[in-house]
Image (cartoon, rainbow, N blue to C red):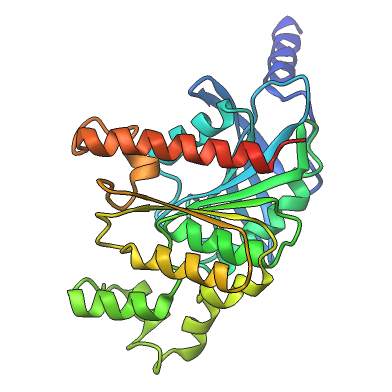
Length: 298
């Protein structure tokens, strides 16, 4: 009996002070960077997909940041550390794994169903005590930047968007990759892009961020590395120009010595990062946090 009671007490202590929304399975994980972390499995389009909720202890409800990761290989170690860093700045941070990743059901679609995975988690997070979803931002890096912009265009209540080195004009980006010999030949790339816009017109149109600009309500901060040879700086400039054309609020920051992925990886990699890139990445974090503070203030 004592063992049974001890186990019950231990399970009770392991649960957060709030209960999960209906349809959500949550499991408390080990803290990351001193921040409590909860694994979520939640419904999205008939699938069960995963994500990580970083929820610091706070006397008052915290603004919500959906932090969309790069690539198609799930949430990296560095993205987890970056999520914890963002949470410690005073935010509830949710990092989706998207369909097909990290044990989520479904298949990777590249900025398609993943957008729905982001939108579908928002009303669930709004039910969590300690989160003030009326103050919300979408932040994304690379693949996650495109997801963030597409999701924000379909969610007018978003207060701010940060897109870091994202593909905003998929047509010119495809041409760039092809001319530079950087176009992948893997099955996912072939399935999504085929032999180009003439071969897969609907796939390209669905992922063209520039056409969503008229529907964006939130101000956008663009973070871009000048030395990025995967998503070159012209992508950032095209997005800024399109935002200005439609009278939207936009700020663009280009960091002269930063490569692709700098926002998430440069602070946490022990090697392979030049001192100038580390310094400029810290400036990017400062710029991002100032932007979020401005637009998510109560």
